[in-house]
Length: 530
Image: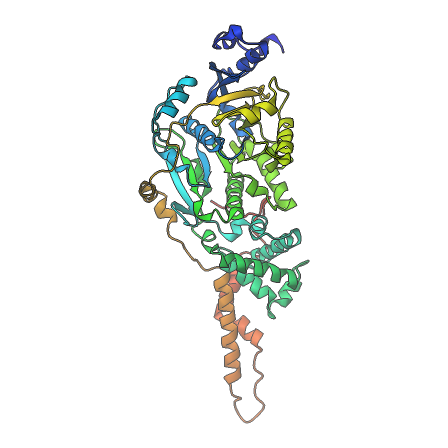
């Protein structure tokens, strides 16, 4: 290390009890003494001692380099992400949180003082003041308490939808062909009944000719996709798809006082549909990725996005889905967006994704079984070289303590630091349901998204086509021959349908789309035109 890169001497002198510390602890403490704005996680733990003047921090500019919050159940992961979210909001950075268990809504209310909180604040020299964050609450399709969040089927795209429908790779590719067909024919896919109508048509006797024109799509595979879609609808999933589609730029809002808005997606009502909500979160991130401009490294992120229960995102994922996640996480950093995955062990996150994460807060792990021991050893191997015996530390630290390593202001990883974390200053638990209802209905966004809209789309156009064909067939059967001579040859059913006013209207609508198929992204999601 050169003289210009040496840690400031004040960092060593300011460490409580520095004279009694070994050189390793002094080096760790100085590595976290950043000059610029940073989030305060807690204080250094060394040899069982809490060193309140040795602050463990994350530089604000590196929060777009992504991160991981991991640890066994009950070790404090949710409180850690709440602590980080609070401080980001204070710095003017909007935050998105997925509230899986329904206990993060308290971030919108000031915390409650008690002996445990005050003792922790005293230990870490924290000036603890009950503080609420500006917050908005959302719910997928209006299922639960929150402003309804919907996406059109077209916007969601075939890759993400395949994950939700649990399709295999061949079926995923076939679904992509169906989207391609609908795009070319001007059949808008706003909700699930639109997609079902298109697949039903393609698998019908009338649609077989069209099906033959879609290379690689067999009737059997189309039938499997249709059955999966029908079963998905039967589970009550329809409300999540439709209009008005949620504009993900709403997540970038700040409060009038300059603090970043904390957007909380309430998910307790859909806990039994993990693939749905985890994939919806990926849609939000992908949509932001499409729309945000390249900005490079900023003084602070535009948004920090937390994926709670991140393992659900990767369970049963296709190769295409995993590749798309990896590429999105890799590239969205340059859009000023940071992504934190919150899960139990690092092995829950694929190695290609894990390699993109620069900041890490690892809570305690349990090692009661041989599998636990194997997971512990694998976790230790993912850390840089450490002055600690990490196997011992990770099984011995308590709730609200963690092993931390982050990126420095120069982008280099900091030494591993066992840390006693600060206490969140907002309410550590859910707010009263009545207060949550009032907050949702008072939001300026509620009127914009609360009422579902059902515009004319593929379902209505194909239904009109069927009705026109049926009417033409009925009229053809009733028409008598005129005169005594040979009756004029009646036009075929196809000719009558093509000549009908309804079909001409449909053809005009299709014609506006032919030649300019919807532009799609890594996930097959449509690029929104705002």
